[in-house]
Image (cartoon, rainbow, N blue to C red; front, top):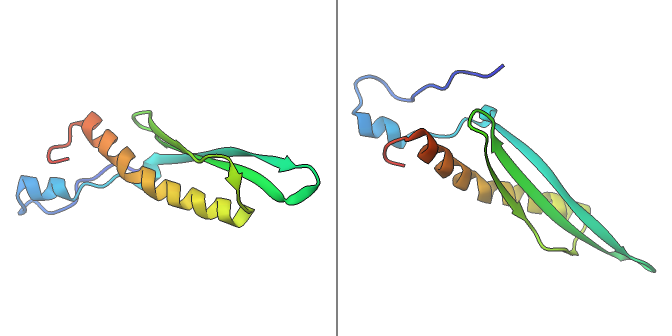
Length: 106
């Protein structure tokens, strides 16, 4: 069930100050991940991985994707990279959704 979007702030605040506080609701965003790996035969520690993160704003269908190059990394390193990539993509998705919804001041 989707939660209704609400504008933060009280009625006493000016129109512009309320719009500056607009943030993308995490409940409206779906994260998809992927990637791949390639093993070097004979060298089990030389596994190369790539990480892909896609964020989708479900109400509008807007999506942003980022993919890392194929490089040597462990599974924990791949998880850390996935978290970094999500943090990097979030402001981009927020900006695109704000433009699409015509939110002033964004």
